[in-house]
Figure 1: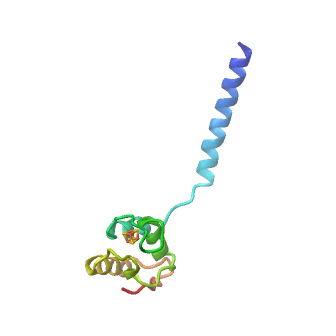
Figure 2: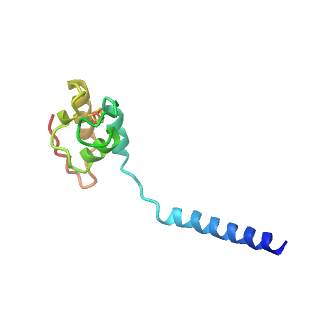
Figure 3: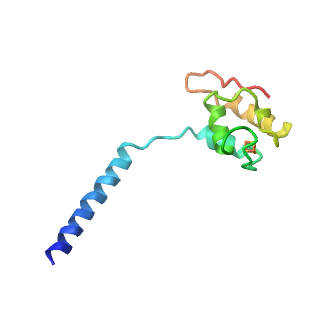
Length: 101
Ligand code: SF4
């Protein structure tokens, strides 16, 4: 009986510890990444050289992508929508992401 109580207490303590650590160590993702991903074709094909559309969007926001046309299935409508979005959503310091069509 005492083993069950001990394991229960240990589980509760570890659970609260993990919940607290998750709050402290939480990393806020740039909301522009998800917005740009939604503007991509969404085929998850990897033709851009990234493992998927989310990674490509992350690359755009982190200035690792030079040309949106690296997304091979993308069309002008996708590229123009992303460029317009990025123009309206600059970096925190006011600078703009330097990516070309
Ligand atoms: S090439 Fe375009 S559609 Fe394919 S994974 Fe990359 S971003 Fe997504």
